[in-house]
Image (tube, rainbow over all chains, first blue to last red; front, side):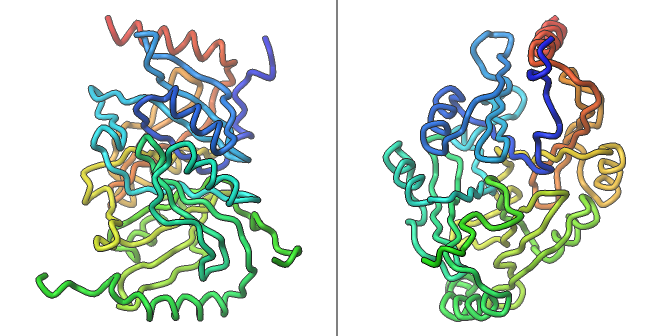
Amino acid sequence: MCAKATKALDDFHTITPHLTVRGVNEAVKFYEQVFGAAELFRNLAPDGKSVMHVELLLGDSRLLLHDEFPERGLLSPLGGQATGVVLHLIFEDVDLVYERAVEAGATIVMPLQDCFWGDRYAIIVDPFGHRWSMATRIEDLSPKQLKERGNEFNAQHRDWTEKKPHE
Amino acid sequence: MASSIKRVPEGHHTISPHLTVQDGARIIDFYTRAFGAREIRRSMAADGTSLLHAELQIGDSKFFLNGEFPQMGLTSPLARGGTSVVIHLYVEDVDSLYRQAVDAGAKVVMPLADQFWGDRYGVVEDPSGHRWSMASHVKDMTFEEMKRASEATADHCES
């Protein structure tokens, strides 16, 4: 028995996202190419094709994926199951990852920019419909500075919470 | 850019989920009671009631929240009719976490049980429609053993 192949709980953080993806094989390629992920383990469904489970290592974090199984209600964003989760990634060099993501066909939701909270930050949608934010810290702010910057931002973005006239 | 800046800030992992939730203040209370989450910071929008951003921590992991801002396309799974991302929690004592979550009002999606892959595992849904799986590892298995167990389970399911 190979001890290294043992699934070690120690390798997992408390929180790990688990994504339903249409076309896991392609997604794994994308996550490897763009985010530098590495595949650790996969399990196929009885049809020998659908991927029941893939475990990836992305930086210091695990990422779990499986294919769509509509009969069990497991649909991806491409299958019409929009998501209310953005997966946030922190890198040493966000410019590099952002460039690779766009080249690999990601859709830009928020272009890469220096943000008020001290991060260089962007949001993309990957070709499988999942949303990713990515950041590199560029400024260390005290809680007080952060609060002031937040208040300024709030004052400039009242439209976020204002009701439209016809509502 | 000052060289002293930690480009990956202390205490942050590479991946952290960022959830759009309904009724931000109440859901923070829920996460505290259900999952033992610790609130690190919160910031409210100009209207004083909408949650602009919150940072919470469960165990060694951070996660972020924002309220719904439909004008910005930010809506929770409740408004979207489901989710395609499950937030998985690995903890030392899943039985007590599961009980705590259900007591706090989480809806059971998959009851806690010992699973073929060596975990004691269950799935619940929070009041915003986000799904959380939770597990404790109860049996060490090699990837080869997991594969065989999975095949045996699949055979069983098909018969």
